[in-house]
Length: 457
Ligand SMILES: Nc1nc2c(c(=O)[nH]1)N[C@H]1C(S)=C(S)[C@@H](COP(=O)(O)OP(=O)(O)OC[C@H]3O[C@@H](n4cnc5c(N)ncnc54)[C@H](O)[C@@H]3O)O[C@H]1N2
Ligand code: MOO
Image (spheres, rainbow, N blue to C red):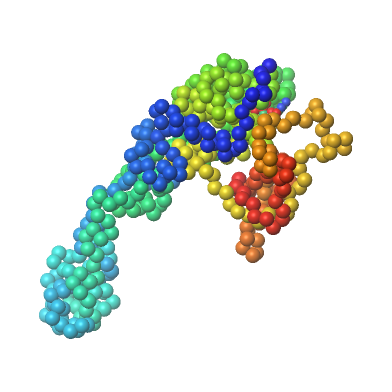
């Protein structure tokens, strides 16, 4: 059996930071990523990460390079409002606000209709809004009761909104509907964006079968039956990957055999930017994930200091990050939020940090953990010993993930109520947020009324 005593344990933040640092240190580089990159990384995007998409498909993507205006806008002197176009020369010698006699004016020569946002008729250089004009029934004669204030009044000069070459969108910017429209005004029909990260998912486990197969208790080797579990993490990873802007690369269920896991990882790192390897990360006799990752690449950590998700691991194989997550979907859901999401954000050129929201704790967290020994609590042989508690005194030893129901109260404050039950229990589906509750010697839990920084589920 494997010796687990040398396993590296990192906190959530350390694990992400160490993985991103290891990627940056790869010989071919990582393209670009992160906070500093988002502010200024023009030209630093690795070409392999860039693709062109039509403007209509670009919203929600991240610009890979700066995008400039291809022409001036407006492209000609343009009328600002629905107007009567005039010649300033007919007003230049009049007193302020005085209007000329227009009885002999000819439409097309002395005046013309001009509409909002449309090029001024050739030769006309000022305009007044049409509400100040009375037009004859045959639309050939006009009487006006107001004058333009100066040459060019009521118009917009060519290039006043943007000039050819103006930077309209910066590399690293998230494309919003407004930005897409602005880039379109600069005559860009397609734009360079960061390619969607490809995320391969490898489920492992002899006990797993795809949901939906017939149930036959007598043929456990090929059907859903006694002792079999349904493989539900593929659907979870696919949905989250797509929600976070990635492309899902599915793998079949891989048996708990060292060579089979090795083969699947080798294929996955060829095809994907990020690989999620599921299960086999713990202490059991068929758990190969850590061993295979160690042998194939650089191990970053074997486990983390929170539960669920204690057995989350990271490695780099052939320059590709592998996120190892543990078994059931209820816990896997958190570890994907904690580890897959920041990596996908980094690949997309976004700040890898997942945002947290301040909320007022409405009620105390229920006392968690096991009861006192000798009072129905677990005995030594049933309890997992603390592992690698390399924390400094006063720093959290472990984080428990606590589910919350967050709602705006009448006073406008965002209040969070702890939701009873473990992740995956029927009550837990009520939760829309969660908090990482620190514990360890000398650590006090937040009290009702305290502000906690929680994450949306
Ligand atoms: N002696 C110890 N036993 C365990 C420890 C420990 O520290 N010492 N940790 C426990 C914790 S916590 C977890 S979590 C698991 C993690 O182990 P693995 O990641 O190796 O997971 P498996 O044992 O292979 O599976 C656990 C569970 O999850 C189901 N599973 C796996 N993959 C999927 C999938 N794709 N879809 C749905 N469900 C899946 C699997 O069938 C098992 O039921 O170890 C504990 N034990
Ligand atoms: O790692 Mo396990 O997911 O703590 O339940």
